[in-house]
Image (cartoon, rainbow, N blue to C red):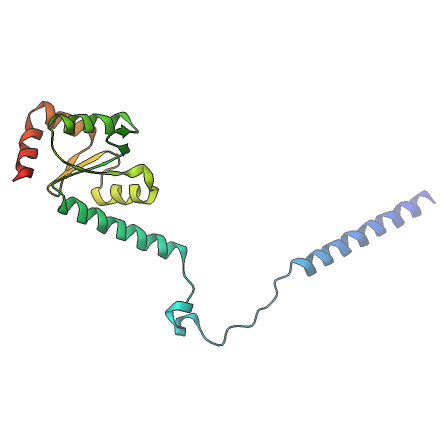
Length: 164
């Protein structure tokens, strides 16, 4: 009798498992959705699906264009972390201090304000670090290179040429 009770309990458990699996399949099965009568390619641009990747790519390219415009428009441009009165890293502070010692006007951009802009700058310059100094559209370098140019006396000449 114990065997028959055990077999009966086992068959009930198997039925319960089978029912649970069947119910789960019903709940989670993919429903066929009728296809739209008009393909996305044929619809008006306002109604086409927009990809977040496309939007980011467009924004990335526009940022690189903006960077290019700025470095070619302004005589001296510094892309840094923070602002000149409050640099947010020692490397940016170093370049600011060097530029301030020449008492020149220069334009700055805080690259901590927008991560995508930071990545666009790195792609634009093919240089992995910030700060980045540009003089008359030409990339001069980051903190170490600017320091070397300064101590070698070359940065003074580069900046004087930018005033012309």
